[in-house]
Amino acid sequence: MQEVTFPPGKLLLREREAGDIAYFIKAGQVEVFRAVDGEKKRLAVLGPGDMVGEMSLGSNTPRSAAAATMGPVTAIPV
Image 1 (cartoon, one colour):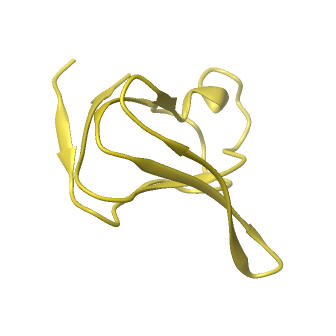
Image 2: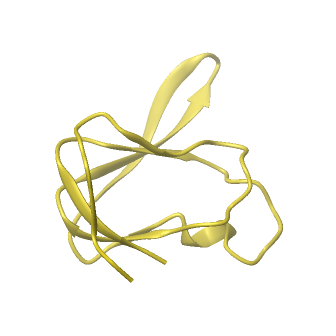
Image 3: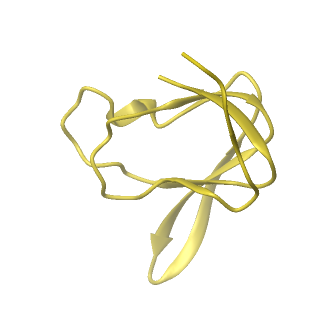
């Protein structure tokens, strides 16, 4: 697969959407978060070598969290 580059603040994954893609992070940081009582709650900060979005791939369950870039991010879609 080919690398893609995302700008800061780009929403990569939406909570409760179907999980049809994941990303292997090559450079940059991605914040994983959930909406709790209308407020954003950070669950994790992922970086190079981490995967984001893999938990719902192939499981037919909606995503349990959202993910957005914290700065420029280079990733490989899987």
